[in-house]
Length: 135
Image (cartoon, rainbow, N blue to C red; front, top):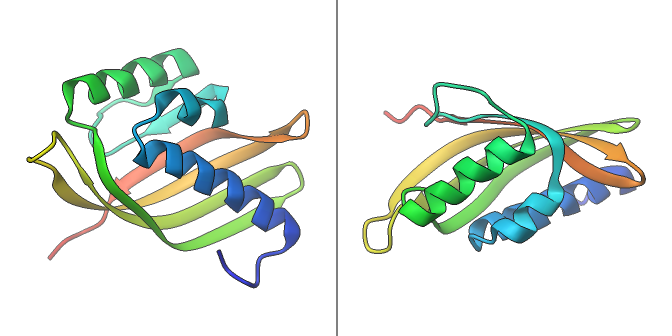
């Protein structure tokens, strides 16, 4: 976390760090406590936008069961947190390994998470992940 974060930015970043910790642990029960019912998700591995918590959870848990989205390692890099009242936009790079044990492959990604404060809690309402260009 950046020492220059305001208290509001630090509060939002703590949510993202906890969310990513659950992601890295392949812990879908905890992961989805940070997600709003109206979530929309765009990922590089899916040609469609995922809309709503039920569809997001179904795909997420299917990928874990099949092993292809299993996380072996995950790290956020260069976070930027912008807070606009009850809305926050968080961007960062990540590096990690994904796939079945023994066959995990490295991935370098860019992520944007949009959060809204609802009833005093920050919830993620949108996630956009894209692959970085390797060359």
